[in-house]
Image (cartoon, rainbow, N blue to C red; front, side):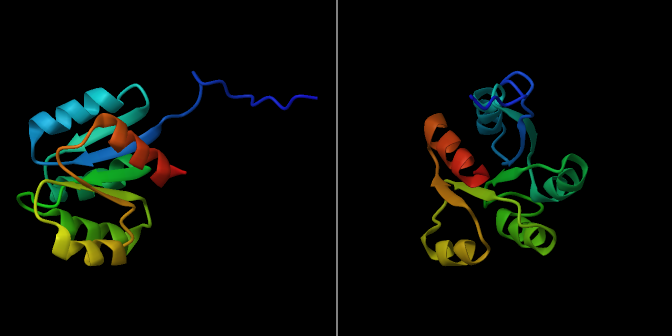
Length: 129
């Protein structure tokens, strides 16, 4: 007897992804690349991300480190105070010295810009598994 899942792919609920990056063009490209597979919400700074975290309740956060108002490191600290949600860091900055700190905060992945859509999707899928 074959086991059949009662939810087909069309009815499967998409994972909610919150993208936080002050580079608006990059954010839009990521949204376009992921929109068929995930429910996407985005913002351009950590302060707005904290508001959206409560409102949207994403399954995963993808954040840059260097942003105005509230940067990625402070955002990660705030998220970790309230949640163990998977976090993927994307950054074009020099992260070598920050990697041990990010790992200590339970960051799922650290991806250097530029990156491919395939690479990002692989990291998202691994973090959500």
